[in-house]
Length: 250
Image 1: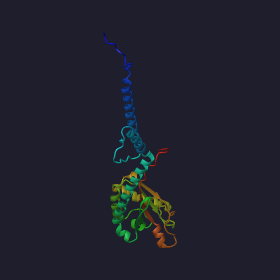
Image 2: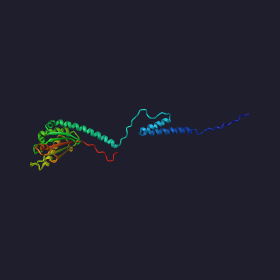
Image 3: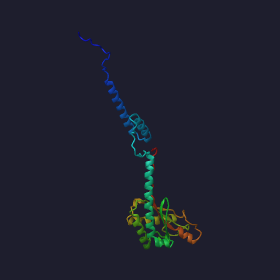
Image 4: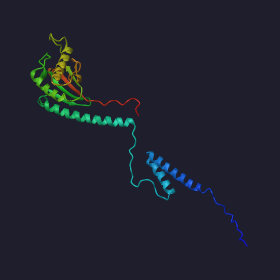
C-alpha cells in the first residue's frame, strides 16, 4: 500500500531577495549620509551624526578620536584687511630703518640744530635750515649742501616711496630782482633740491617740488631767530598706504 503524502502547509517564499535588497539600500543610504556629512565643514554636526550612526551600527563612533581643528573660511574683507595690516607692518619697519640711516648721515647737522629728522604716520620728514643750503635770497645750492644732499639722495634712490620737497620762507618781503616774491623763491629752492636728487639717481616720477612762501611758519616771525627757523626746506618721504578695500567686498 503506497504511503500517503501529507502537505505540511509550508510554501516556498520567492521574495526573500527583498531582505537582501533592503539591507543593501540601507547600507548605501548610510554611506551617502556619511559622505554628505564629511563634505560639510561643521564639526559639531559631524560629531552628532557620527555618534548617531555609531549607535545604530554597534555603538562605535565614526568620528576621529583625535580632535582636528578646521580653519574657518574667512570672508574676503577679513583676508584683505589681514594682508593690508601685514603690508603696513612691513612698511613701518622699512621706514624705521630709513629714518635711522638718514639720522646717522645727517648727525653732524642734527647735533648743531640745523637739521631735524622726524617720523610720523605720514612718513619721514627732513627739515633743513635754508642757511645750510643757500645764500641769503638765493636759490643755488652751495657746495657743502650739495655734498650733504647727495648722501641723502644715495639713501633715497633705492627706496620706493614718493618724495615731496617743500620750500618755506619768513614773512619779510624779498628785495631780490630775480624773485618777485617769497612764493617764487620758495618754489625755486624746492626745485633746486629736486634737481640735485635727480642728478644723484632718484627717479623723477617720485619727486614733487612745492613752494609755500611764508604761509606755513613753524614759529612766529617775531624775532630774527624765529625768522631764520622759518626759512627752511622740508623733504618729506611719504609712507606707502595700502590699497583701499573694494566697495561692497565681503
